[in-house]
Length: 112
Length: 114
Image (cartoon, rainbow over all chains, first blue to last red):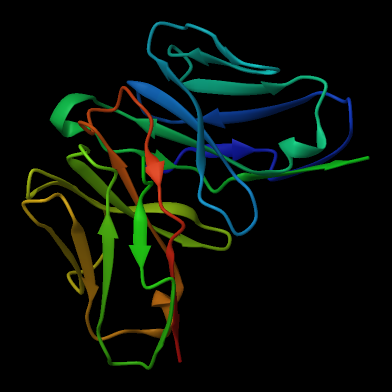
């Protein structure tokens, strides 16, 4: 089942913060975050395994609340290079049963 | 290290035709996944292959099929094309496909069905 992302789109000025949410109605094994710039391939940002750990990648971090089946991606002091579409992918199991299901994406635009 | 290579990058077909898309994963990666990307629907999982075996399949009709060769290269085929099949088809590879690491995506094959 496809996870639900919110908001669908967000416009920021350089230096502002943003939060992108991802929720599922099913218990999750892992949550993955990718960013896709226009005309390019999606690029991996980070993965969070069940356990509620928080990970960071420069000024981008994420959390995973496995009880609520929710994950949030935090973009701090946004840069122009952060513009793109952010996808969360969720997996209900690992190992050979692993299947990554992506949300519809959140379009992030960072303006000068 | 070469990335994931997909061919062709662009193609135009007419309804009723069939199409075959190719994906060469990163050397050493044994798992190849395919996704369909359309505006408003995000990335939709088609299927995943590991060591020439289909391990998982998404909710697509039987017109969509795939296979993986012994060198891990993969192909997907769509028969009896419909207008709604117009999309960007993305291939992604990973070493084991067990969900604990990143997927490496190719730039995709953009299919237009007229």
